[in-house]
Length: 521
Image (cartoon, rainbow, N blue to C red; front, side, top):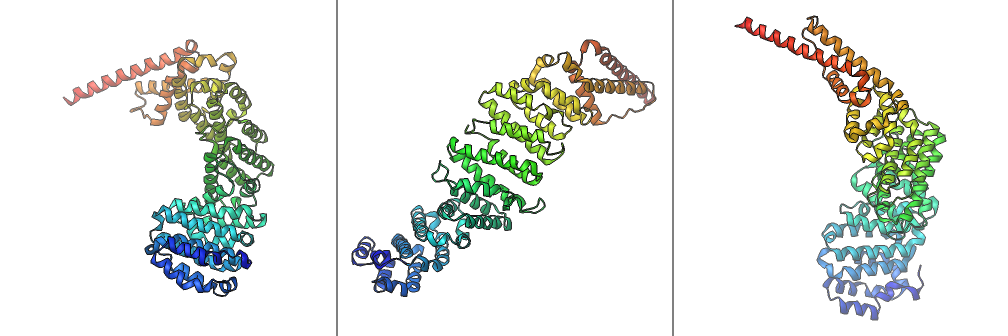
């Protein structure tokens, strides 16, 4: 409790200050409350004795009709918190509810009143921090309605004021606070709650808009630790993804607002956590960590990430450890992270570094996985200079997967041809051609199959010949890619024989149609 000489409310309502407020504010509400509580605040003991009546009187005037009185009343409430200190805490819930009612009654559309409200609330948090940091959960409970207020700018102001306490609180209380926040999101994973918690966490980690607070060194590891609420929910739980979404929102805000140098700590922290997770075999935790990292770095639209070496080393570790099978969700995440690295190095014109990376990633292109085809599909959307670097590896992947997913591989092969035009033969030296043996065999077997089917149809053994759409798509893909991926001189006769046979089939069908037409006549 403040000493009588420090009592702010007493000073605010004594003859000099109180008179000044009266002179500056002739609003009826303020004049009436001044006359009502002035006799009660002459001394600090009086304030302590009449605190319930004083607070009730002040809050009763917080209505839109008395908007001219809001600023002095809110200042007096803040000053009263400085006088009463710990004795003021029981009033916080009532005050928070009154502020919410004031905002809902139209104050949320008045910038001046919003500023007055949160200036007062911020002072209250500052004056009472010594006591409030002992039970952060209580503060979070009483501020829930304001933290999840429908208007985003109100949520933002509230997040900023509450973050002050979370930065000051002991580690154990900080852990409880995080658990409380994440529990609120899991309980009701609405966009309002995810936005509110994401904003609060991002404010806790910053001391200014562009600088990390020292508290971030404690908070970030807590947020992504496998013992935290980040990893407590099962995949089947409807709220399981909500915590991850909150962290993504918070980290994306940090990316947008922090200086590039400040972001380095975040990347290294996430990469270190992923590295520590690899030997433990915690696939769900590893997947979520990778998702969080990817969500921030995949759209480096501000060009704030210039050092990708840590992420390159991380991918190398993940590939070496073979922590996942080719069809698991984690391999998708690893491939997405690789794509982020490709984009980053390409954007910074670090083609030599990209060339080195491509040689390290050779084992990836040996995967028998649909995820690899998705990765290649994404690569094909990049600049041709990137395809020149990865071209040989892509061809090897086509060779490995042609029998597993022929239609999809052939579609990618056609895109590959269109992207590089006549440059494909440059990839195909003697050794490279040997590595495409499965493609050559598949082409040959498919062409022979169709040659046989069409001959049977010509001879009348198959009438009518049944053409499945997917098989026709495969045949068309082979015809389109034949000259690019085979020795055209050595194998051209096979393709020509098929074309000649198809011409014969068309002639036979035309003759049959003509005689059928004559029979009708």
